[in-house]
Length: 479
Image 1 (cartoon, one colour):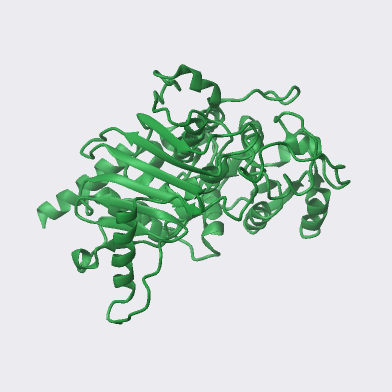
Image 2: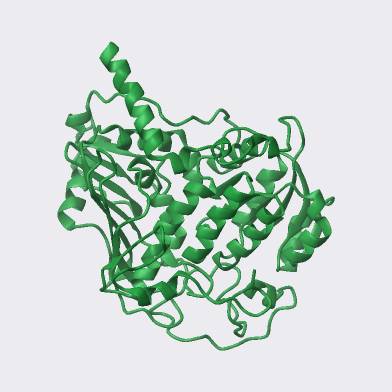
């Protein structure tokens, strides 16, 4: 029993220490005395962008405080949501909202297109506001690095919107990966079928669409933000078709990478990769490619061996880009056997999920058919028949209120009130986002293995690729 307890303590200490950047609370960063909210004090929220996810963020925040200001560049959306919050002041320009309401706002939610995540969030953090920002944290790696820096400097409570992080089953999955139960892990395969059927990009689009009059309800210049000026085009950008454009979104991996890679990234205590390489359709000037395969290389991390993480997206020659066929078949067969346990059947074996992850260890495989990591299985079934959860190293959610999306807000709100830092705070969420966005740099240099010096944001063997780490802001939007 003594040895068992010693191992449990060792696992907990080593995992927490090895991943200190993602588990550290605000107390590890700055003086807790700066936190002004008492546990019982009401928080004044503002929400920027109110459609779809933004509308949900606004609603969730409002259930746990006062919604004092709402902002959206689409006045139709603004007015509709405003009907639910008659006491909240309405704005189309977040800058005016901060100018007029800055002293009345404690925290904000941000759900704009990726193009404006950083400029809004950093403005808020510099004013001492707590920030919940949707994934990916920013459009460019330099922006993400700045968001990590300012969150630490201004000692604000932050959370990135990769909602699966708030699922207790996800947290147990992280512990399984970290515990060594699967043996040494040398490969991780992650994938999504997006953008298939979700938004237009290459090969459907290879040039700018024809211009159209800007609808009277849309503040087009504000929607563009720091991006280069271009004509409005109906149905091509607003409200939900912007992800495939280089100037506005971060493509398929930007949309889903912070969800699908999250559990393995956390469990394997990953940080900066040592190299990244993309194989993809030749990128065009305007949109992300129709398909891509990304290979990341990570060095040893303590007792963990070097590991390669693969990402697959889109469709090539009419077929989804996916992990190696022999691995896929093995997982499909073993997972089907697990699902049919004690229920013999001759039904066809279901195919691999449209998005998910396979973590390959020397002793077994973890397969998550879930985009969010809240559903996973250990394969082959016979090797894990006596599975027992490993020692707990991550906190569990202490609420049954709402779904995992709202619970992630609750964790952030508890941090605002002086509790532990939320699990996907900008320190961890930023590191995860930098890893994800490296794929898009690699796509720009498709076919080239890019050595990465993450600390210094340099590609030692391909300096020209460093231009893709940032973008020039449109005049008037610099910060």
